[in-house]
Length: 135
Figure: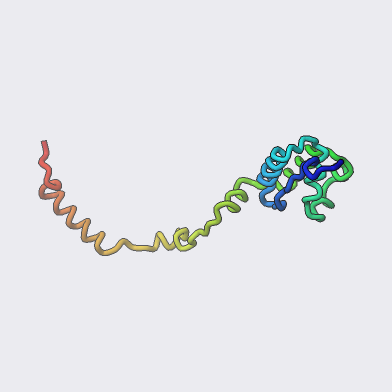
């Protein structure tokens, strides 16, 4: 007689194209927790958790088969991110263009206090080398 706990049920997270590697890591943890060992079963869990547009974009070989490893490899290669894309996904930042404008940096003049400090330092250098005696 069928008992509710006879067949493992893995609950997979929503698939996110920009985090496919993380999605598979999480899914495989679910498979481990629910003792889903059969790769054919894993294949069907992954297929039914994908949006229709993703399933239809898979190769016919993967669509018509039950090879979990081939399905995983194709999804990972399709949605693989470059390192800069991964960085931007995790750490969004904005560049202050005013700070990066080289022309403006060259045009800036030092503050007047800077010129006064130079004059004072040059006078002290001539008189006492900043309070230290020469040996």
